[in-house]
Image 1 (cartoon, rainbow, N blue to C red):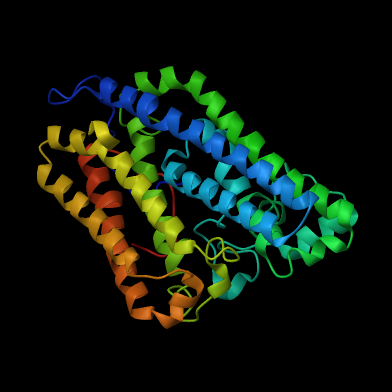
Image 2 (image 1 turned 180 degrees about the vertical axis):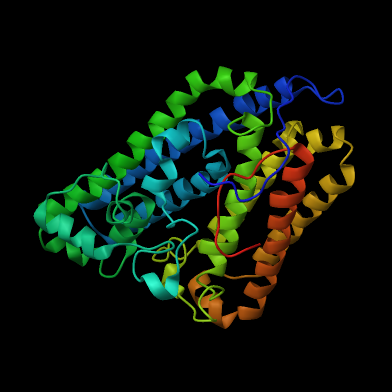
Length: 358
C-alpha cells in the first residue's frame, strides 16, 4: 500500500478525553461486525440453495428465486464492506467476490476488465473447457467468479437457454462459483472469532490499528462509490463517455439499491449503530462535534440524492443524468469529510492511493 495522505502518527492508546476506545471496539465486534458476517453467511447459504436449484432446473421460477436471493446476499455484502480488513483482507474477500479493478484503471484506455466488469469470455471458456482455478490471482480470475459472475450466470443474456448447451459443465461452473463465495464468507465469519481480541485490544490510531482500519475503509468505500460504482460509468474519467454496462451488478439491475446499502452500512459504522458507540462519538470526545454533525448531515444528504436516482443505474446515467450528477457531487463532499477531515481529527493515515483526486 502507498500513503496518499500524511497525517500525525496517531499512536496514542487507552482512553482519549475520557472516551473508552476499548468499549467502542468491543461494541463494533460484538454488536455489528460478527453478527453482520453471520447474517451474510445466512444469506449466502440461502443463495447457494437457490443457485443450485436454478442450475439443476433452469426456469423462470427458479431464476426469479435465485435473483432475489442474490439481491439479498449482495445487499448484506454491501452493508459489511466497510469491514474489509482483518479476516476479510486476509481472505481477499473483495477481490474474489466483488472486484472493481482498483483505483488505477481507465475505462477509456484499458478495455473490458475495468470497474465492475464481467469477464464473460473467460466464464464461457471455463465452462467449455471445464478447467479453471478460482484461487488464481489474475484479473481474468477475479472477473469470472464471485457476485459479478453469478449475476451473468443467473440473469445475463439468455441465461436460462444457455443451460441447454454443455449443460453438465455450465451447471458445475455455476455451482462452483457460489460454493467459492460461500467458502470465502464462511472463512471470514469464522476467523473473526480469533481476530476479535486483537481488534478490541488495539486502541491506537496508527497504520494497521482498528481505528485506523475503520477510518481508512470509510474513505476507501466512499472513493469506490465516487469512482467505480457511480462516477466512472457516468463518464467522470472518460470525458463524459457513459459506460452503462460497467455499473455494479449490471445484469440484475439494482446498482442504486446496492449503493444505498453501501452508504447505509458506512453510516452505521460511523455512528456505531443503535448503540451510538462509533467513530462519531469518538470525534465528539475529541471536541470535534461540529465535524461530527457535518458528517452525519452529509451522509443523510447523499442518501437523499441517491433515493432520487431510479434503478437501473445503467439507464439513469443518461435518462436521469441531472439526478446522478447531484448524487455524485454530494458523494464527493462526503468523501472529502471522511478522507481528509475525519482522518486528520483522529490522527489516522490514509494508506491507499487513488488516481483521480477528491
